[in-house]
Amino acid sequence: MDSNGTQSYRRTKVLTADPKRLVLMCYEGTIDNLKIGKQQIAQKDYEGKARALTKAQDIINELLCALDYEKGGSIAKNLDSLYNYMLRRIIHVDLKNDLRAVDEVIGMLTELKAAWEEILYNGDSEVEPENTRFGEDRRRASAYISA
Image (cartoon, rainbow, N blue to C red):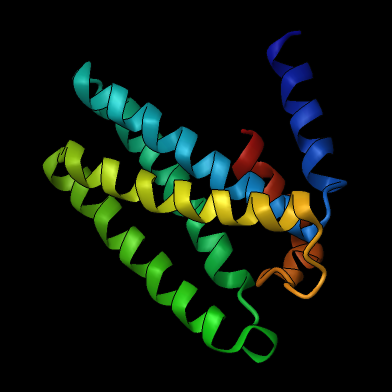
């Protein structure tokens, strides 16, 4: 499949995903971009590193913007703190090329991803995604995840 076909497929996947799946896709996209950034640091491709880290930050910012503090309560507040911490660590990575900091953020996202997979695949209907507002702007989220 060519690059445009792949992007179209990913964009459609995002636009049709339910909110729980979309959160999972955001975690996956952030992890993928952090891994790319890590590879770019090792290869001393600092322009590529900057692109990958910026994309990871953009996805985390989308997660932050989508938090619903009324419905999410303390979970939303905790995720807000965690996402902001991740953003600070990614800035640190960008400035210092600190591979341990990349691994730290990847580890946190991997744990969050596992929790969301549990919710998504085991059908825990009592747990609502903190990001129910993704439906309002799926096209923007699609651009971050699929580009």
